[in-house]
Image: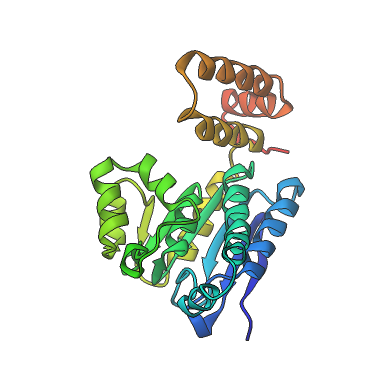
Length: 259
C-alpha cells in the first residue's frame, strides 16, 4: 500500500498519522503534501485547537527510503531537490502554524522522522523510543531542519555528536537534554499527547499563537526588536475578547471558556 497521512479528530485535537507500515512509516512527497494541506485547513478551523503528529503502529517515522534515494542518484539532482522542498514545506507549516503541534513518538524516529518530531512545539515519547540522525553513516547530510533544531536546542558539542556520530539516543536521555517534554511507558505516547493537547485547550488560542510566533523570532531578533514585538503582541492580546474572559474567570475563581 502507498504511504498516506491519515487524519482523525478527538475533540478539538487533530491527529495526523503517518501510515506506511511496509517501510516503517517512511515519508514520501505525498505524505508531506498532505501534511501541508492538513495544517493549512487546521489553521483556520475553529474546531481545531491543537494538532498531534504520530506514526501508525509501533514506529513513528523511519525517515526517507534508502531505495528511493539510491534510485534518485541516477536522476537529475533537481528530482531530489523537489522531493526535499515538499518535506521542508511541511516542516515550515508545522513551525508557522499558530496552533500547538505535538509529536507523539513510539519506536523509531530516524533521519527526517527525528527532524519532523523536533519541528513540533512539544515532543512526547515512549521510554523505549529511539532517535537517530544517521545521515553521515550513509554519506549524506541532514534535512527537514534537523541541524537547525538541534543547533538551537543543544550546545554545539552535543548537536555535533548526534548529527556526526549517527548513534541512537533514547527518550530518557533526550528528555534529560531538554529536547523531549514527556516520556511515557511504551504504547502511551499518543494518550499522553492527547492529554497535553487538552490542557493546552484551556489556554487562550490567540495567546498561544503569539507565544509560538515570539519563540520562532527569538533566535533571530536583537533584544530591542524583540521587546517591541512582545509589546505589540501583549497589547493586541489584552484587547482581545479572550483576555476579558480569562481575567474575569481568574478573579471570580471560575474556569475560562475561550472562543
